[in-house]
Amino acid sequence: MTRPVREVVVADPAALAACCAHLEQCPRLGLDTEFVGERSYHPELCLVQVATETALYLIDPFAFDSLDAFWKFVVSPTHLVVVHAGREEVRLCHVAFGQAPARLFDLQIAAGLVGLPYPMGHGPLVYQVLGERLAKSETLTEWGKRPLTPEQIRYAFDDVRHLLALQERLQERLERLGRMDWATEEFQRLTCQATPETPSLEAVGEKWRRLRGANALGRRSWAILRELYVWREKAALQSNRPPRAVVRDDLLVDIAQRPVQSPRDLRVIRGLAHRYLDEIYAAVERGRAVPADQCPKPLEREQDAPQLGPVVQVVQAALVDFATKHSLAPNLVAGNQDIKALVRAFQQGTIERAATSLVKGWRAAFVLPHLLAILQGRRSLRVADLDRADPFDYAECDST
Image (cartoon, rainbow, N blue to C red; front, side):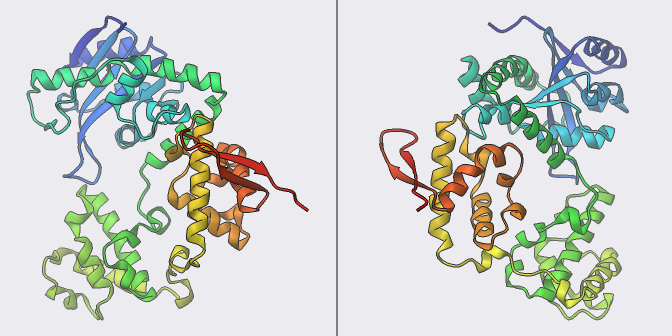
């Protein structure tokens, strides 16, 4: 049964003070947010939804100059913050208050660690675990408009109504399986990934390679494109605009391969804001100054031998089977790129430096030995029963 709770809309200082006084007495809270992400670099916070054992709150951020009095509870180590797919909640908290939640419990991750599908939406998770159906009618609503409609308010309350009950059920399963340490590791990983970094070559990593047309460039143009990408991120952050509103992706790729000799040469590019010409040219010059041996190289996967493909498929199948046998969501354990990185590193003898989460934490302790045994030929697999969700059986191979 759902606990009876008070439902409170917080839109004035007195209501916020009462909400915070209540939260001070609560060791855990459920958190969700509604935001608009298309118009700015960081999402624009439009609504904060909070659940405790006895109350639900909708906090209107437009009614306050600051919500620091609230965020201090979210980041406090005395409070467990329960979220579902909480990447944006962590990010918004960090942007607003400069800190991330100290203790996080993500329901979507927890569900994957006890064998439920990953990633699972909020409504299906509520039904799967609690047997209750949620109406999802406001997912595309405009949360930035006021006043909120009765339908929006009902939807917003429902989005946090079941968070604490879900956390109780999933934590029970995690403890029964002895996986709370795994969950804590995953929650910390989510927090790190969701915390915004100041744009830099290190923070940007290989994201610039995802731009359409980037793969066709040479190494020098890649160095220029990388510098342009970092500059655009910084400019977007400074102006709080979406990066593509500063300079379009296709223009970055076009500039990276042009023989630009001065900011004036950039004026002929249609759609390029002239106020950025000097900064763009400076980024081009930084790319040109990168020593030849330090220019980006083709990714390893672009040079893989043909035989790696079938091996990756076998290891991927073995991982799915292993995860299913042990009540884990395969997609949470590893993705296809993780498997490719593992097989590639095994071939090169660099497992300890493999660019995959499979060589870290609980995955390295629990999953990696099984996959390495297959790669090393110490363990064979056969199709045992096609009617099973985990159709393979394994046998240890004679080392002689």
